[in-house]
Amino acid sequence: MGRSASVPNVGFSRITLSKNSSIVIGVCCFVFTAVFYSATHLTSLGSFMTECSPGAESTGQYQQYLLWTLQAPSEKESLQAPEVAHHEIQMDEHKSAKPTQGPMPVPKIPSKAARIAHDATIQLQYAMNSSTISRIEGPNLFSMAKHVSTFARLLEAILTDVSIDRRPFLDLRERYFGWWKPSTTTHLPWEAKNHTTGIVLTAGQGNMVLAAHAIRTLRNVVNTTLPIQVAYAGDDDLPAHKRQEMKTLDPKLELINILDHYDEDIAGLRVGGYAMKPFAALASSFERVIIIDADTIFMQRPDEWFEENASLKQTGTLFFHDRAYGGRRTTDWVKTLLKESGRRPSATLNSSMFWQEELEHQQESGVVYFNKAIPGAFMSLLFTTYMNSQNVRAHLYGHVAGDKETFWLAAELADIPYAFHPSYAGIIGPISANAEGLPEICSPQPLQTDLDGRPFWFNSGLMEDKMNADNKKYANLTHYIPGVTNEQPVGGWRFIHDHTFCMGRYVEQMRSVKDAGLEEVANGLIDEARAVDKIFEAKTA
Image (cartoon, rainbow, N blue to C red; front, side, top):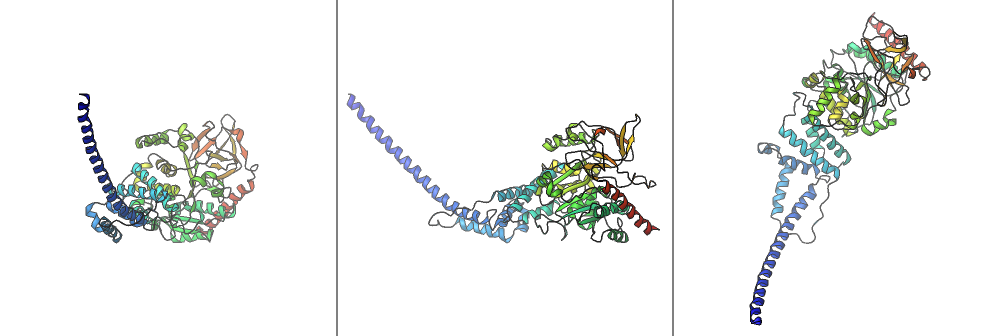
């Protein structure tokens, strides 16, 4: 009974095994067929991707094909290039191709830079198709900051990998920033025709004498050999005979009509004032540019800072702080701006006295360093010009004093590294006594020192009071107090009138210009200003 009962069980097991074997064999056949079919098409697709992978010879074709696929159907016909059509035909050929004999070719792996370029290109193209960027209609800071950040990654990629096709970048640059019209002399980092360093300032009839002081003291007192370019906004701003007078001050001086480089309807440079500075820097022929105000006076040569300053070498930017005095208006606005954009302050901003102590101003833009060869620095400069364009500055200048905060703010919003000189502005002038008989220095000249605490440059020119045309006295440059750093307590500034401040705190740090070894320079600055003024007085007599 036991044996007869076991026979059916054995038979049932054999039947079950037979069915399972059939299923397994069938599945294996299906998988083999699928793998063989996929391998054939993957080989074809891999061949196509190998030919057109970013970083290979056909990078541009591949990127253009991908960009073309994102276009609306109505736009594809007008955008269909021979390369795109070629790839579609090629894809059809691969679909019907017979399996190749031998091992599959190993696809060429695109470089990291090529992958970054591809992703950035797609992002910018998608954003362009989703909105209108061709004209500046208002202060769309958040979206533009995001685009600038993406452009910086794209530019860095194409400068890193020379095999990447630059045409998509150039096309997107034109579509996003079409109001900028680079000339044949404009320094463009993707062309790198030269690697010059130079000084750029803006001047018109109103500040021509101040600019002349700056130019002649650079040449004849601190003895810089850097080329100097002066930007002006058309003949109404600086007529031909005035330009000729400027040339007599320095035969090597180059003058640039800034209106030739931008769409005036958007830039609004005829009435731009301080807004012209970033536009002038962007239009200049210099790779490494030092932007200065017309009333900026150097006490040391500015030439070597690109080589000697570590922060400038790393970020391609160097900004200088303003006076460290209280006033929450600007800080509160920046905090609101970052909150609305969902961004936290960068480490640079968060550690600054401006942010922690809520100062009135962060930057003194009398001198700004930019190395346009560094993609982030170049794109933040381009973003700064956007922020100073006509419609955008109409909004921004209600929160900041002219252009001065836009340089660092452009980098901050675009999440691009930037650098500040560590100390805030000090003061240079004669010693006087306050109402309590305590010593102080009062003057309109905010002073920037070098890393050793010696006077480097100051603003507001060489007159005792540039705002008072009737006051013909020259500045008295005998003593100075260096500015504070982020680690020192804020305070000590007292506003008098017409840009004149007094500093009565930190008098223990008060030093004489003579002790700093710069008395001869200080006297030479005043002598040169007198000589320039005599030249202009003779022309108007």
